Length: 114
Image 1 (cartoon, helix red, strand yellow):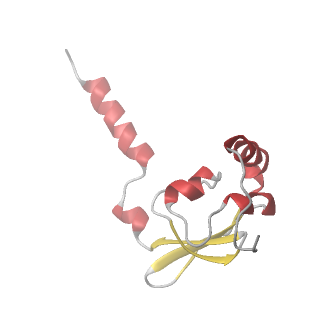
Image 2 (cartoon, helix red, strand yellow):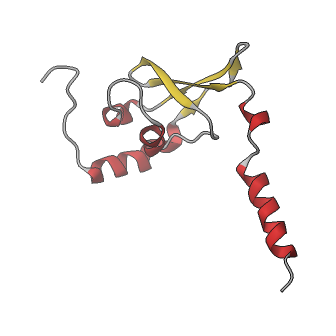
Image 3 (tube, rainbow, N blue to C red):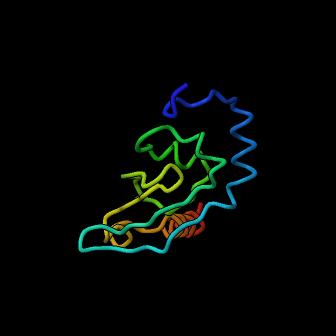
């Protein structure tokens, strides 16, 4: 088996590993340039075997226990356990936080008279 082939694992093995190591995921502070906001995420080496090669779609990295606000996309892997993310620099100003939207909806629902 080459170093690029992953050893098969069961869904139960993955679930237990994520449960055990998700709290050990490290998030860098955000940094930016004129266009993008960046951050890197360091996952415990015990979770690396569950990460497919290359860039992962959002459902895959969230499925590993990585928690970030909306808008982040993985664009590169620096090392097997260091994942790089970016999003447009003005993402927060262009998109209201979900809690704000839901709070407004709750007020609207509460204010509706029958």
